[in-house]
Amino acid sequence: MTDRPTGAAGTARSGPGDRPIQPGGHAATAPATVRYALVPVPGLSLEAVARRSRLHPELVRRFVALGLVDAERDAAGRLVFDRGAPAVLARVQRLRSGLCLNYASIGLVLDLLDRISLLETALRGRGTRSDTPPWT
Image 1: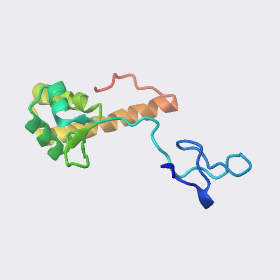
Image 2: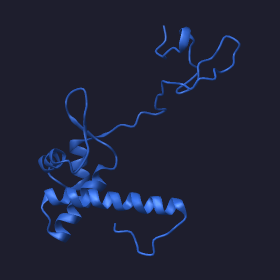
Image 3: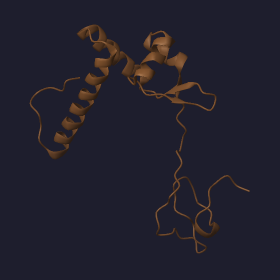
């Protein structure tokens, strides 16, 4: 028994995200519906994020509750962060200290900055360029 998924009619797959192999040895023309990450990317624990961002873990939990930083829960119920979480927390802290904003308004500012970044990316993709430097 194998831990790989099977394709239509029980044909085995040749690898992660590949098309099923037909009896003649050729790949099927239908696109694969099951995909696996080649290498699992481990997330950062709450303690690791707090240590890297030099914040108290309870403050990091509060940021998660306010929606300022994204986190998921693992099978044991612990918070797991992606690798960019310390940078997001540093950005929150810069906005808090530089603009003297409360955390609710920081969420709004972060949303607006993300929208501006998306618009600037779209402008660069179309070949037009904004003469002003990016906000962040």
